Each structure stands twice: as C-alpha cells, then as structure tokens.
Amino acid sequence: MTENEPLHFHYDVDGNNFTSAGEASVQVKRMLRQMGFHPDLIRRISVAMYEGEINMVIHAKGGDADVYVTPECITVVLKDVGPGIKDVNLAMQEGYSTAPDNIRSLGFGAGMGLPNMKRYSDELKIDSVVGVGTTIEMKFLPA
Amino acid sequence: MTIREMAERLEATVYAEPDQLDIDLKGAFGSDMMSDVLAFADDRDVLLTGLLNSQIVRTAHMLDMSCIIIVRGKKATEEIKTLAVENHIALLETKMTMYEASGRLYEGGLGR
Image 1 (cartoon, rainbow over the protein chains, first blue to last red):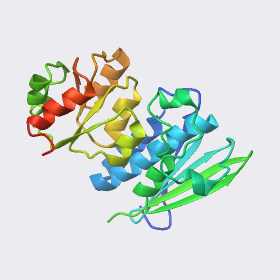
Image 2: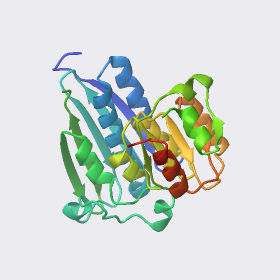
Image 3: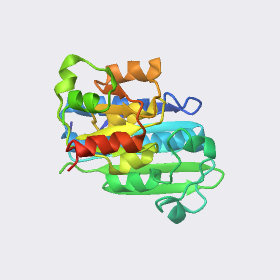
Image 4: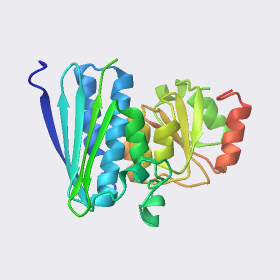
C-alpha cells in the first residue's frame, strides 16, 4: 500500500433484501482485520458503514459502496440513486427519522443512522439532491 | 460476569461452544432498536433484545460483542442461529422480560 495508490474495494448493496443488509460491512470488517488495522478503528468503520448500508436499503433500494484504503486513511463512499435528503441538518439530529413504521419494527429508523455515522467517522460529507440521490463520504484516520 | 453465569441467572437456553461460556463480560445494553445499540453499546457488553431478525447478530458483530440474550421467551430463528455461529457470538434465550433479565444481571454485579 502506498499513499498515492489506495486499495479499492467495490460492493453492490442489494436494496431488496433487508436480511442481507450489512453484508458489505461484514466483508470490509474481515478485510481490514486481515490487513492488521487496530480493532477500535475497524469497529468505528464497520459500525458507520453498516448504518450507511442499512440507510441505503431502507430509503434508496440499495446502491454502491466503495472503500479506499491507505495506511493513513480509510475512505468509505456510499452512493445511491434514492429520493435524496430534503433537509440534511434535520436528518443529522438524533431521533429525527423519515423511515416508515415497518422499518422501526425491524430495529432501525430511530433517527440515529446519520448521527452514528458522524459519531464514528473522522470526517463526514453528505452530498444529496432530492430526486437524484445521495452520496456519503466518510473518512477514518488511524490513531 | 461469564456467559455461563448469565445463563444460570436467567435460566436460559444456550446456543454456544463450550469455550464461549467462559467469556467474561463487563456490562450490558438492552434495546430493540439496533441503532441505539450501535450508538451506545460497548464491545464488552452483552446485548439484551426482544428483536428477532438477522440484524441483531450483524449489529453485535459490528461492535465485536460476544453474546446476545433474547428475552421475553422468543426463540432464535435458524437464520439467527447460523449467523451467530458463523460470527462466534453466543446466543441465550430467556423467558424473562428485558426488565427482569437486566435486573437479575445487575443484581449479580454485571455493569456495577
């Protein structure tokens, strides 16, 4: 691994299957373990990415997950062509959710997804256009 | 508190490998909302939940948790059991409510 050429991993997030939601995060977790990153860093990355994956399944019928790895920084990019986020500031508030009730019965939609992604990442960028889609970029820096 | 002792205190059905029973945990987090678990739980916690789908195992796995206690007499599905085995997560089932199960574990010193 060099700083100039990050390792790139791509995953398709299947939006039609809630049961398999999280599989990309599981694979990323396994890969980062094999690379020998610190468990605390891996936990932060996998939790944040998992929340993102769940969001893509709940709101956007899936999308693309790309992970770029260098020794200095791990970047997770989640891109969907879903409905977009109307008010990003509101969506960042803990407890605010637009998820339907049936999602809450599955254990999500408590309005903690984006706040958790912010909590566990070192940098969070949200680029969202209503009717076009959402791209979320999270950066994680090893301690 | 070891997973073995938790199982005894909760009169629980256990799905785990023998060596998993000796894992010593420091605290607990109880919720049916997985996002709250992801926000607040620690890797040395046991997860108490009444939710019954594969995401309870994924959530525990993401946080490096080693044990899930399913409360209110619910039975783990085959899918949950398989996923738990794959990820080395012990499963306990208890008839107790989350309140009672939490109380018994706290009384036994877990998380104090």
